[in-house]
Amino acid sequence: MTTIASQPPSPAADRQRRSASLIREIREFFRLFFVAAFRPYRPEQHYMRGPGPACRAKRDPATMHRHLI
Image (cartoon, rainbow, N blue to C red; front, side, top):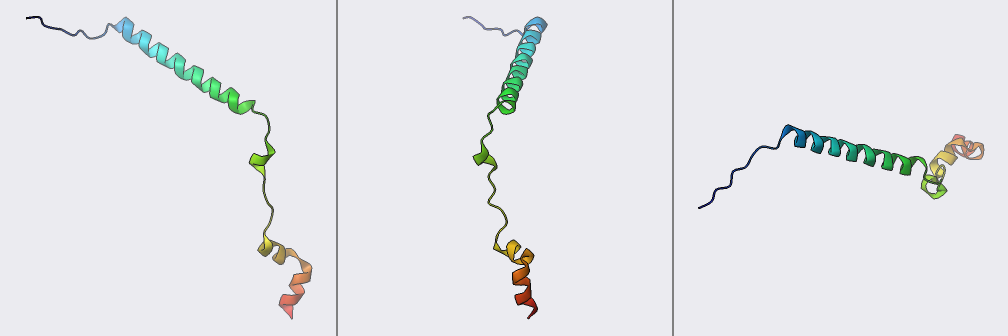
């Protein structure tokens, strides 16, 4: 019968795995940063319709006279 004994990972292997993970995270951060920072301007993403009828009614002097009468 054979037995399998597991050994804890060596400190060097653990350090190498952590540094590879950190490098991967830094690389992903900069990739996302450059995608967001240098994306071309797309005006349809910033389109606003403007004030609605209630706002226009409050500021329009012609409609203010109707409310005073």
